[in-house]
Image (tube, rainbow, N blue to C red; front, side, top):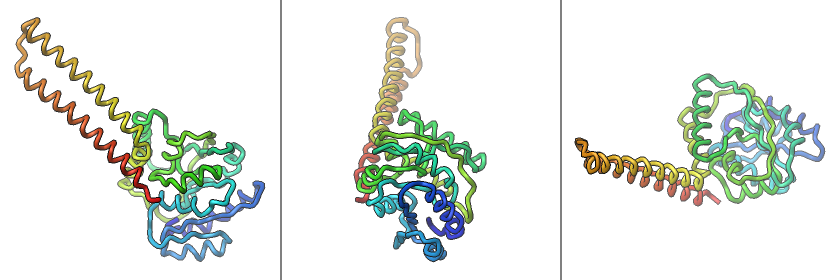
Length: 277
């Protein structure tokens, strides 16, 4: 949570009520991402624990700090702090738990406007085209302690994509998104775009493979163009103005696409390896 005292006042009692229906003893841990709106006081009044960060580290790094703070937990729910993740779904996620695995809250109906939904649809198409699998979940999930510990140690730049990359035993439950409980969203369209791109960075190896496949496809197209030009020029003797420059430009473009793709892939791999430990 970052400056979410209004949301916290409504969300934490609902989460506690949902957890009280489950077996065992449950702790609520709020990661305070350097709030300055009195959030810690609200959390203390509601008998929840708080992990206060000295400066704002951002959404994904804050999730990791939370995972590191619950190393002794057998199971861990991860939820956003704005109230859009429905506490009433906690029991359904618990019922679908998978040993040494994860239960995803599959995103159902959303409350955002048309512009956001179109952008999210385009992102899902891009993710599936590059990675080869759909992205249907966000941060709301139930993790076995082995998964939470692994993510806390290894780090990640995109929590949902990291879980997808690990290909763990999993289950999923469809959960509709609720309206915000209060305040304004901290995610601008620019931040949302960067967040979406970070999911591809998290899947760096798959992205490199996708770039390589695109390069091979371009090579096939350019190869076909090359054969067509040679056939037309030397077999049918048809005049093709500028055939040499066309061929050179085509090959140059293929090489440029290859270079850009591999540079992006290497940057992504390097970024992934340098995640803060």
